[in-house]
Length: 190
Ligand code: NI
Image 1: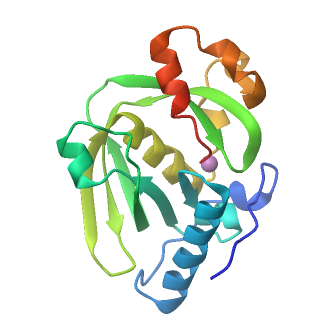
Image 2 (image 1 turned 45 degrees about the vertical axis):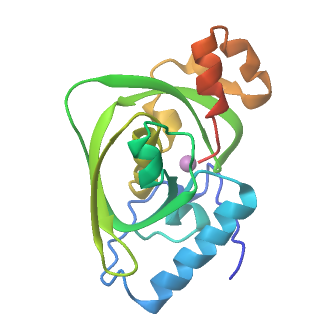
């Protein structure tokens, strides 16, 4: 296992469309996933896409809620990790949701991004299992952020109001209501 170097905005690998993985169960994919998990844990992030570690392949990892948490209605216990190759995502309905995002490849910054609130997503795990889920809220935001990396898209390109691109050290000025503070607690690097 290893801790991998994170590509930062400006590196061409973050602008490419990553390639499909012919065999998600191949040993090299399992090894890459393991290194990405080590890296994510070391940096205490929420998610990581393979292009962010200089590998232009369609592999993402992200923290996801445990089933027990989903049943309890809580979205705060993010102990589970999902590893997905060749993922897909599609919006369910027209509802959009606004949220602050950060990115390990754009260190030090935060931006306000609007994305579909409800999504269906899926993919294949390194064990060869097919996953399909319908999610909303923060889970949906993290998934869309990570999957965008596979198409060479950074969250800054999803922003419509560039006055909402800020340094994270100044983010306290953006949160004035209690609801916003709750959201602020969920700001994490992706
Ligand atoms: Ni990111």
